[in-house]
Length: 224
Ligand code: SAH
Image (cartoon, rainbow, N blue to C red):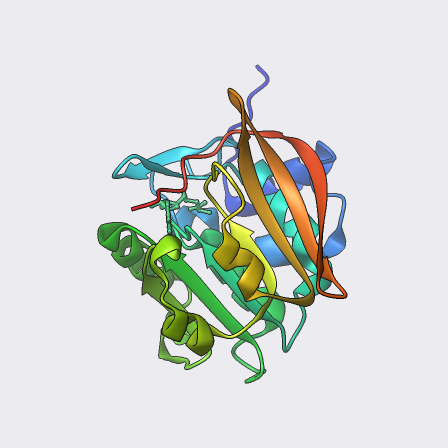
């Protein structure tokens, strides 16, 4: 019988590679370091989204892979990255591994999560998987709605080379444009009629360039 359920994390990542979804060694190496089984208990090694709580899901492994692929060139040791709607913490930790936050003090990785219980859930996941991250000054999970970031908090956050948004917005939030560094990249799903489309947004010479990628299915980026 053909099944997409794999027995462990390595075989899940290998199956994404075999299916041509992971065609980039950096994405392969990054995802291999972050065992999905530490971020969700139910069916972690099946290529599908899984319900967490409060109406939110951990995205499917293929979605994590496709989003990470678009960000690989702006995720390097020393990069500043933010995961908006960090949920389980899976992509946040992938960003931390890829930018080597443990060794490189210039790297800075933040997960922003609207639901307090979900932010706490991700911290527990990280404590199980990579507890050393929780002792760093350059890695943080913050309970915060992106639409409620004040001017002062925006200043404190600074600019980001890589922004990942794990929930779909009705329109491109102004705050994210402000947080995007020059030559930085923002990956965000945007609502289009009854569907959602993943966009890659870059800032070049202060101008925003929008690249429409493909249709996706995410939870909603909540205004409040
Ligand atoms: N990449 C995450 C996706 C989780 S689902 C993962 O794979 O685990 C999207 C998350 O976005 C949810 O946890 C939801 O609570 C959060 N979210 C929704 N609106 C938000 C907002 N305005 N600000 C911050 N987080 C938000």
